[in-house]
Image (cartoon, helix red, strand yellow):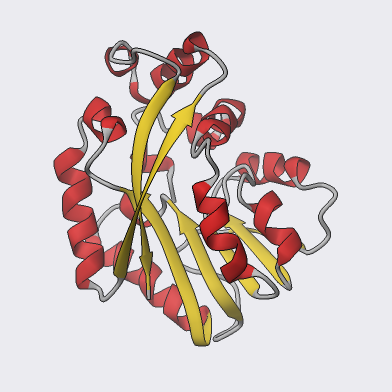
Length: 221
């Protein structure tokens, strides 16, 4: 799912401890958690692209049942370690284009930074079709993607690509809610190391502190 979005895909697929640092620094104020937690309470949830389990360990305890799906075996291994005391989670190694769950079997589908990195509109549509298939009647979808506005996208140089992707998602019928968040790494050197691992030295050299403004959009049905 996410492997083609990064300047160095090995970071996501294999170097999962670096990705874990990235995930832990993101949304330092925990605004995403505060927004979504009440909406997932006592629901059957599919976390589509769970990564290292950063959101799984927050949302799963409040859910009725929690499916955490990811394409990377190593990411899932770390996710299991990060959520080892939570019994409601079922981990699934699979692509987002073919979810091994029955029709209308989940109440909420939650995905973070997945749709934008699927290559090709045809594949993106397959993912949205799968989301619709597994979702129960009156079920909710929450798709988190980057907003083209903000320091993070300026540093990465992804403004136009992100903007086009968000326009496409909006055309699929989703509503948009913008939230201003930020990364905060434990120190400046860690910030540079993590960003360099993802996007290269030239991008990491644009950093001026361990804090990076990061605006997001939550797409909902």
